[in-house]
Structures are given as C-alpha cells and as structure tokens.
Amino acid sequence: MLKAVILGIDNFSRKNIKQIEYMNRYNISFDIFTNNSLGDSQINIPRGNKVYILKKSILSRLFQILGYLLRKFHTYKPNKIGTKRSKNKGFTPVFVEFIR
Image: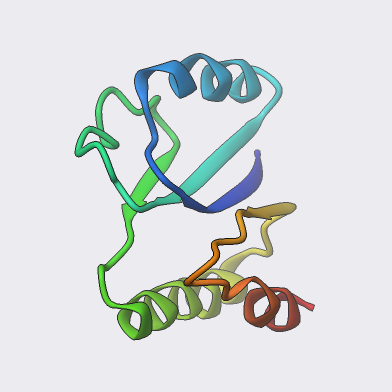
C-alpha cells in the first residue's frame, strides 16, 4: 500500500471520509496531521489511515512533525506529502528541505 501524508489541514471532517475511502480503494493510505479546529477530526477515520492532532505550540508542532518524519523515514518513505502553508505557522520550507 502506498502512503500519503497530509500536513496542517484545519480539520478532518465527515466530508473528507469519502475522499479517503476512494483513495484507499487504489491502495493509498493516509497519515493526516490536523489542527482539529472543529474538534471532530478523529470521527470514523477509515481503517488503515491515521489522524494526528497537532500540538498547539508552534515549537511543539515542529518537533511533533519532524519526529514523525524521522521515525517513518526509517521504516518507509511516504510516496506523497502534502502541506498547506499558513500565514503565521509557515513551516512548509522546513519540511520541504527535510524531506529532500
């Protein structure tokens, strides 16, 4: 199964479940990092996928994601990583450089 990582979406909602289920049919599973802004990000996540709630502190969040990437890159390399750039917490360049 291919692995995709989604970094920094505001919330993983019910509307996203169908998208994940659709991609799961094509052997793609997801690790999703969310801000959990609505508080319901872990509802009914399809099996084989994982939702990580990002920590509130910017520094803690940075270490959380970098720690995940370090651990996961030893066991597998994700096939696709998507990130959303934020105005205040734009760590996208850090993650892009780390992934290379």
